[in-house]
Figure 1 (tube, one colour):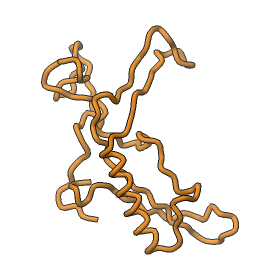
Figure 2: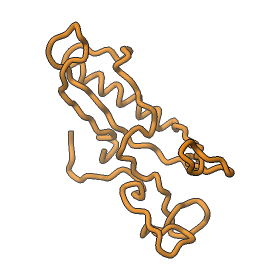
Figure 3: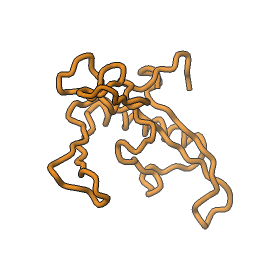
Figure 4: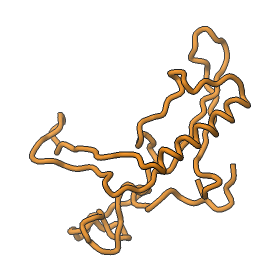
Length: 154
């Protein structure tokens, strides 16, 4: 995902056929999309409530933007085009699913970063959590957006 012309990442993976009426292999087609930033998306700890394992209960506030929905539609069209070139593909089958937003294990930008502690971010640009002296947040969640890979073309 490096620019508007390559706005999602695709993965094609061969696996043994799960359909017991078919002998052979199938190709799994997965498309990964960046998520547009939305300040209202957040994880909130609420009250003194505890979850089943005894840690503070969380409430996840999350919604897709119009840009997210447009990107999903473009990705599904691209996926169908690739699938049609490989064989039979039906996006309406139960095996063709749109996973819940946030299902990827490679989320970037989910820890808000800012140069000043204005109440809208978690840490400074170096990863130091606001209001602490030695608590750092590291990893791709601190990155402000999906990585840009120069020269990458599908």
